[in-house]
Image (cartoon, rainbow, N blue to C red; front, side, top):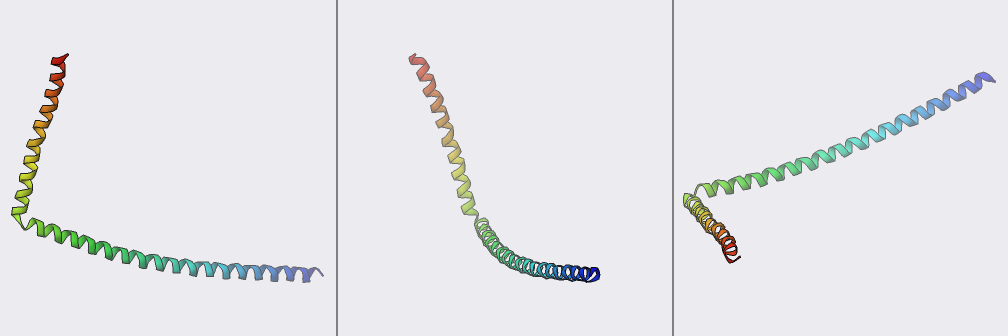
Length: 102
């Protein structure tokens, strides 16, 4: 009876090994499907980002091709810088006025 017990164990081991192999194959196939879906989504996202970048670069190029707008914006920046200086001085003057009052 010992040989039949050994053959039953071998058959059970082979059956479980085959089941494990089948499960591993199913898991691998599922993983490949997930990877394919991720690659597709990443390609779609990349094309969207490329389109956004191209639109932003086109907008930047159109703004840089009009020097009047750039000169106007630099004048606004310089006048804003000048207006900021008196505000700082007025704050300092206010502090001096408080010291004089004390």
